[in-house]
Image (cartoon, rainbow, N blue to C red; front, side, top):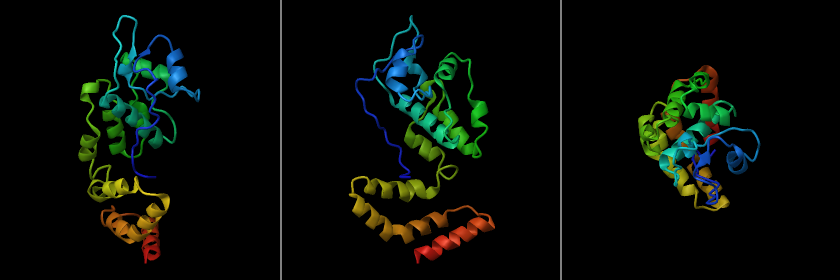
Length: 198
């Protein structure tokens, strides 16, 4: 993993707003796989008597990122399908039960905050990184790892491999320095990594 969230699938032809009473647009533009998983922010849907939004906002992207993170933590199960998201929009569905299944309650809390119904209550990505530093995101993530991976984005594949190979002992040292105490089997794995780094 690059440990990096990338906004992808830029498609200016996709609508900002979707009718809540007709799934055809959602199916055509956002559900090519037919799985009905839905990571579209609820405020992008509108009823017949409501005005439609005309631009995608950072809060909408945060909601979608929260849904993607939830799916990763839930081993591929989506946080919402289309009918659940529309019910969530009406205040008739709560994803708390799914989030309670996550082993890491900090991860569950992050996803809960990122997928709040009210977009004005969602924070920016930088605020989430700061708020969950040391709880969910290790301290080395923001202070070192984030910048390191940023450098790799503009490099060729060979240059990436070379830089990672050269920096591996330093990377390993920084990660292990901030690691929480682990079980004996995890300690054995750490010893193996240390030996490999020599």
